[in-house]
Image (cartoon, rainbow, N blue to C red; front, side):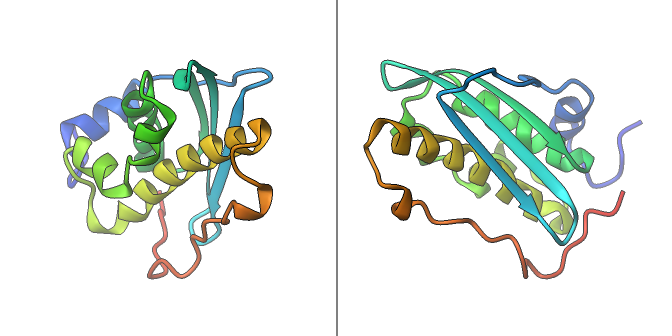
Length: 148
């Protein structure tokens, strides 16, 4: 039985998440968290020929956060880094068939963790400087709490 307010796609990615795990010595690593709800997302990427060759995630959070992590990894795999940087919070939510309004902030974490991993890689290869990496803030997102 699906939970009210969640699309079938959200439930599918929550029950059977894709790309779960850790990549040892990744080319890029991104971690973001939302102190309001306690969600924490980590994304690990390997890069070959400027494309995301492999991507894994580890998420501590609600079902929406897990579904978002799963979906964002599916969306990014095989894309060039520039293409993956264009994946927005809205894209992730739409691809999942929508999220309940109180869970929309979870989609922020997925896109932001992906972008953080790419920026981490770009710093490593000298494409950008560490000072150019802006920390994404998730505080004050309307005070949403993931709850349970």
